View 1 (tube, rainbow, N blue to C red):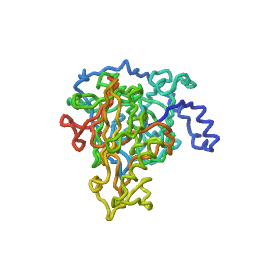
View 2: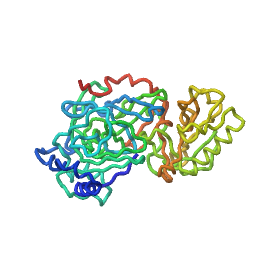
View 3: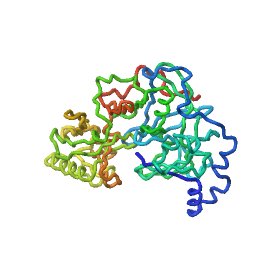
View 4: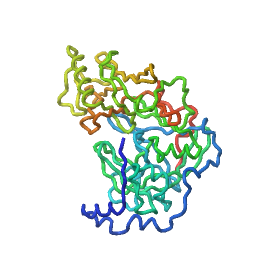
Length: 432
């Protein structure tokens, strides 16, 4: 999850000089390098599908690698460029922009699994609607009209700064068609790692803003503006774009409207009285976060519930803030299920109707490398979330979670996340 802001090249250069990094930039200005040979590109609404794909029946499936613990992150592979090259990206439903660490040249880049992306000369200009969408209303200025500067900042303190470019994405669709399509992405030449840093090529922004990859694919008529994921509790799983992989009647739906993203915390089947919790579903967060009041209530309740049970707090285990040890090491959350009750978040889905997002013990506990059980719900107040609450990957495991941006609904239901959908031909284009 991130916040977005404006970036100007001149301001950046001045900042770098102050920070003593002018030597790094002395070889060539990114803007100077990119002004040579720039060619005209199509705007998103000008792009059309040469294959005439049926959006209602066509989806894209991307296998997921990683887990909540011990890896602490997930990634998908996308093949980008001409010729296409593979890149590992963090899928993030809490942000819009997709970006790669970029050799343009790179000012500050972090360790990455693959060589840095080498962009072509296809710059997105400042007045492009995609560029305007990356900036807050009234803050979009075109100091350099030939390029679109961006800066994104994430909740963990990480950031990326760069320019918007267009390049080819090799995609396979579940109806058997393969297509190369041009999409806008960020060429990130200045990255700062956040507290949850791990080596990665970039971020796959899956928010509902205009700059997101799925928004662009939808504008080109290739898929419906629907994103979903199914993360396995055993690791792995898949993300998908489009609406061809699920039965809508088997999904529990709640509106995306802010009025309906207010939830009530339920513990052990009973109301806590904690209502109007502003909830955000965020695949970019490994763990779930509650505001300070809700977190303190939950941890106090858990400690009371565990009184007299063969568990005691493991103060020497720093895996997560709150862990418990037993008489012997635990191997699986199943070993401790009898000690922990289910939780739930109750959403209003209409004037009188409610829906519940169930949280069995597997959706809020992990087993640490020391064989202790740890609480995977953290205090959002300690990481600057204030009153916001995040439903992270741990709580979405073994569920099909769907973001239908056309109908403005969020849905969930049971899912077999260990197997790719049978209609899947190949998760992504073969870059070999």
